[in-house]
Image (cartoon, rainbow, N blue to C red; front, side, top):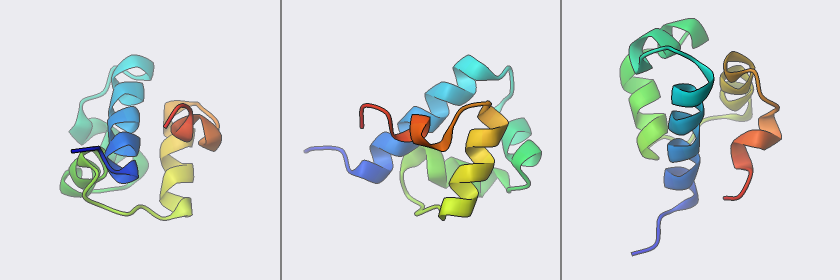
Length: 72
């Protein structure tokens, strides 16, 4: 079964978090102003984050928002 766009995006966010920050999912969620369960759902591709949320994540990762979608 092919991964959905949401799953690929979530995986990319997770990998960027691990590479660009030294933060756990919990600490990263807190830094973004999100709950850990919501961040978990985003990273698993189970949530449909708004453009505002994606902008917040990109800023916290120190990347451009378009970098979140690179090679998806």
